[in-house]
Image 1: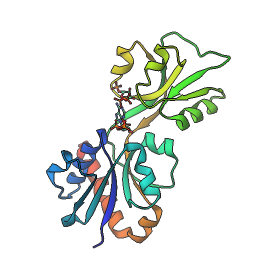
Image 2: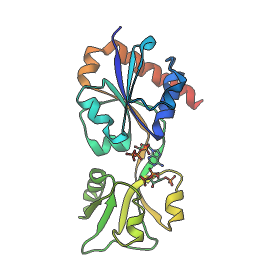
Image 3: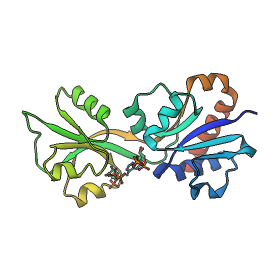
Image 4: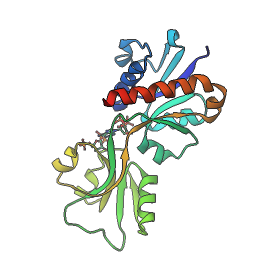
Length: 211
Ligand SMILES: Nc1ncnc2c1ncn2[C@@H]1O[C@H](COP(=O)(O)OP(=O)(O)OP(=O)(O)O)[C@@H](O)[C@H]1O
Ligand SMILES: O=P(O)(O)OC[C@H]1O[C@H](OP(=O)(O)OP(=O)(O)O)[C@H](O)[C@@H]1O
């Protein structure tokens, strides 16, 4: 059996993804969660995990240095990389939405939208026929309307707490987001049996987790 390399996002998704792999029958060491190692090999399962920033997962998979990856749909929509989406893992649910100060309309001369997701935001407003200036930020996006930097934000909403505590309201929902198993197309051909087996087992595990 040959090694499968899987790019995993550090952070929020990691734990849930590991849980799902365990439910799918993979025997993974418990200390993986606490380790600071960036490459973790599990010889008994012939698996190698590389732990990456969530936004970088599709990069490793597109370049083929990882055969597979786990990435949020938000990241996949934003990155537009050539990777195959194999399984909706139904974990780390959240949604993408526009938000802003309550009872405000967008500035009709020079509307500004702050976001960590410039591609998603541009596509969304283009489809509505609205031309906006995108202001790219790396976090704390909710600050932008509060401080007068932008009329709207495009960002992830989960519990809605961040919006609420900062006096913002949601305007439009853009897309539901869950994490996906993605594959490099060449790996998928060359290591088809192993990858298909993993996809099938994960799909089953998704069903079990939902029961
Ligand atoms: N409340 C949430 N906020 C952000 N991402 C969430 C949330 N709930 C689920 N997710 C999912 O988790 C992923 C982000 O994980 P995480 O928050 O660990 O990374 P990040 O903050 O984007 O990363 P970093 O700041 O380290 O680059 C998103 O791509 C999304 O799919
Ligand atoms: O609806 P909620 O449950 O409040 O979650 C949404 C918030 O969580 C994320 O931020 P994150 O914690 O990743 O911090 P960031 O601002 O540094 O991106 C996201 O960008 C929102 O700000």
